[in-house]
Length: 356
Image (spheres, rainbow, N blue to C red):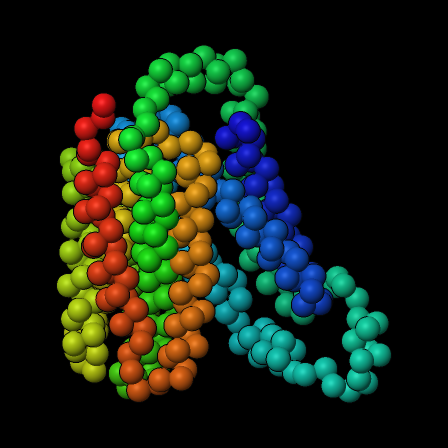
């Protein structure tokens, strides 16, 4: 399928979902709309990576870093914009009371007659979603415009087919990359999701300190993804992966050894966020140097990352609840860092084997 058409359609689906979500009045409808989000995000994540590889090939490392920097920047800015739109004393109180008050007055008969759609109690909520939805729709217009330039697009794609190459252990490399991204993305999302709770319950931090710890993790993550655009112009993707693995190993080890020290938590969290930043885009650029990545191949190892993002935080949340005195979250980060540090040399060895 044409990459521009696929990305444009996924952005339109995201736009529709963003406009409808504030009007959802039932949990089932909200689940359906969030499922649409999941499908569209999956297409964006896979399609964006494949599009850059298709245009620039193994020379697209800086462009790949720029793409993933935009993910981090958007994730950093969007909640701030939403908070600015929603952060009024009256609306916050009304939202809290209306959102969490149990509807137990008339029993199930009233719940059955509840409408599927309705105006949100706070229209600022709608404007926050509508602002981002409109922006996404404008971007989709540009993608559809590129799609209609079929003739020039087809002419450019002909020479790239001549550079097709396939490593001897192509499928094995994809499977190992699947595991590599499973552990990497799982650890990234686990630490980002639980660092606040860990800091308050295990390390004894105040809530504002724990919030700062969470912010510094994602802040250094986004900042180093931006810097990686320039690093990728002078460093090989494999070198960046090795440096990231070393940083992740050292910082996660210090987190485990000094998990009660606030100073160590601040420093190690900053290093850990910076170390995790460049791994995913560098991994995609690295594998393209040795074997051509098609849409199916990219979808396969992106699924590995998505499974890690879904499964590891869920499992760790349950285990951490059963053993609250142990820093299970930090053990997970260290174990994932060890796993990626072991998998990558094997990947490199298989990728560099001479072809017959």
